[in-house]
Image (cartoon, rainbow, N blue to C red):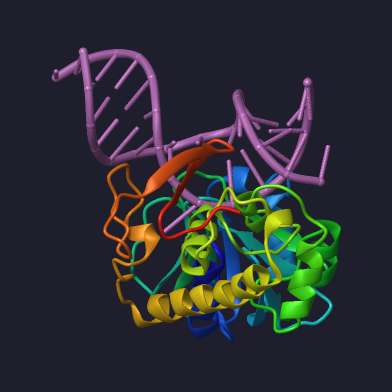
Length: 266
DNA sequence: CGGGCCTCCTGGTAGC
DNA sequence: TGCTACCAGGAGGCCC
């Protein structure tokens, strides 16, 4: 789930389900997700206040409390993380690792089957982002076509590698990098230094369109069209553009899918 | 710097 | 049935 569109979907879910209700406790069922942070620190920072606002940068989600001098909650969803709100009397969902319990008897749960997610505290999201050297969020309005172009000009290597590099642009993972490449008509193993000005412009425009559309689909609860590569990620998957079979190749330990006929390699 | 590969984890599935 | 190998939307670290 958790690439930019999924995390944005979760951010909106967090906003609609978890703002403004006082927190009475943070239950840490699995300290591994805290990566060394003491569970009592979460309690100390959050209990008594309610969540007041959210912020997302790439695949990271942050939430502030109503009391300004407190740190922000940081959530990262790894490969299998997700949020689920329960109401008074409902049982905690499967794979719940951390639960934020509200005064109304409900709770917001971080579920994470594979336990690769993370829960933390940061003084300031912008400082955290800077410390991690994350690139601009892929949907940041400030990431204009010229700004994108300028960043891209400083990179070398496979397009796929650049798109999934969170220090280049934050938010794209294995799935959406492939999706953007297909929609832009560019093969993922193209070398970014070989892209033309038009290619780069198309890439920027397409990246935003694909991510925006994915968010819309998630918000509407609709299935992704079969023309999307993410529905065809298997050895015999079809390219809905040309009717041929998709290609796949291992890249950094996982599979990249693309259509060699519809995506030009430069 | 980029790419290949390993690790941290769990669990579903394919193949024998 | 039981076992093994491999796979899954992330990320950090090591090596070349």
